[in-house]
Image (cartoon, one colour):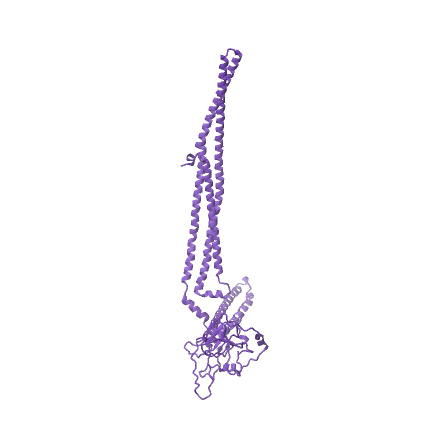
Length: 560
C-alpha cells in the first residue's frame, strides 16, 4: 500500500488531506490547552475555598478547632489544598508534555509538508515542460511534412507544365528536396524528443512522484501516530495523580473516622465547667411562730427591704454597677480571678506547667554553660572560663525568678483547689458561688465567695459594714447609656446576691435580660432603670426577644 502507486494522480487531494491533518492536530492542541486552563481555574477555586474556611490566626475561631470534628474539617481543608495541587500538576504536565511538544511538532510538520509538495510541484512542472517540448517538436514535424508535400506537389505540377522553363522546374525540384529534408530533420527531432519525454514521464510517474508521495505518506502517518501518543499521554497525566488524589481522599476519610463525639463532649465540659455546685434545698421558714422571725439567709429582705440598709460592698453607686466588675476588654488579672473556679484552676495549672518548662530550659542552658566553663578551665586555649560567669549569674537569677513565680501560682492553685467543693457535699441553695458557711447561717466565720468575674470577696460581716461612698470615679460611669434589653426572664429560685455585681431576685419574679450568658454561668439582668446585676443562669428561665430595645417597657406576665 503506497500513495505513490495508488494515488499517483491525486496530488491536489493529497495536498488538501495533509492540510486537514495539520488542522486536526492544531484543534487537539487547542483542546488540551483549554483543558489545562480549566484545571488551573479549578485548582485556584479549590485553594480559595480552602483558604476561605481556614480559621483565622489568633481568633476565637482558631480555638474552636480543638474539637475532633473541627480538626477533621481542618484536615479536610488541608487535603483539599493538596488535592488542588494535583490539578495544577495535571495542567503543568499537559502543558509541557502535550501542548508545547505538539506546537513544536506542528511547526516542523508544516515545514516538511511544504518541502515535499514543493518537490512535487517541481516534478510536475518538469514533466509539463517536457510535454510542451514534445508538442512543439510534433507540431514542427507536422508543419514541415505539410510544407514538403506542398513543395512536392508544386514540383510535379511545374514538371508537367510544358510552358514552364527548365530553370523553373529545377528550382521547384530543389525546393521540394529542401522541404523534404527539413521534414526528415523534424521527424528525427520529434522522434528524439518523444523518446526523451517517454523516459522523463516514466521516471516521473514511477520514480519521482512515488518517492515524493511516499515521504508525504510517512509524514502523515507520523502525524497520526503522534496525535495518538498525545492522547495516551493525556490519559497518563491524569492517571499519574490518581494515587496522590487517592491518598488525599484517604486522609479525609481517616480524619472523618477520627471524630470522637465522646471526646468532644468531654472537651465542652473542660471548656465551660465553672466548678460551682448546683443549688441545694431551700430552708423552711416557719412563719407560724409568734416570735420575731429571724431573717433567712435565702430571703431577699437583706437587699430588698425598706431601703434603709447600708449598701453592701459591690452595690451600685448612684444607680450604676460598681465599675470594677465590668468585663475586662484587655488582659485579665494575673491570678485569673476573673474566671470561675474550675476554669481558673485550669489556667493556673497551665501557667505552672509553662513556668516549669521555662525553668527546665534555663536549667538546661545553665548546665550547658557549666560544661563549657569546665572545658575552658581544663583547656584555657579554647576560651576564657570567666567569660561565661556573667551569663551563668543571669541564668541563676532567671531560674530564681521563675521559681518564685511558680510558688506564687502554685499558692493560688492550692487556694482554688481548696475552695472547690467536694462532689459528695450537699450545698445550700446559693448564687452558684462556693461559700464555706457554718450550718447555723447566723454566726458565720470568714466566707469565701466569688463574684461573676470569679474574684473572691471578704467576710459577709465585712461586706455588710463597708460603705462605698460615691466618688468622682463613679461619676464617669453615670453618663453611660443603659444596655438595651434583649428579652425577659423568670426567676426559678430565690437568689441573694451578696457579691460584687450580683443582684438579688425572688422566686417567680419577672425581670429584663440585658446580657446573655457568655459561657461563665452568669446572666446580666435589670429590675428597673437603677437596679441591674448578674444572677446564675441556672436560676432563671430566659425568654429572648431580639426586638426588645426599650429599657422602660413594662413587663408583661409570662405564662408559665
